Amino acid sequence: MPSHNAFTIALLLSLNFVFFTAVSSNHHTPCCSLIAGLSDVDAAVCLCTAIKANVLGINLNVPVSLSLLLNYCGKSVPTDFQCT
Image (cartoon, rainbow, N blue to C red):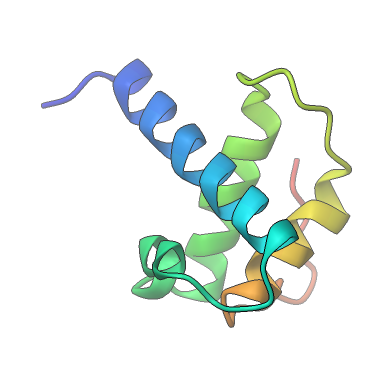
């Protein structure tokens, strides 16, 4: 079983790729397939955890960043979901 650190690093690298691809492109990319099979709640929790971990040292506005990333990949922030 992979370590928690390895999972976190892989997730953050994927999130980094998704975020910067979303910012620089008008086309959906295969990176959305990372969360495609997840429910909106699971995708939100996954991305929220990655954003809050801040391993890459990028300060993001969590509600805005989470919403942009989820919407870009055809997901939505669940009602009453708070990234805490």
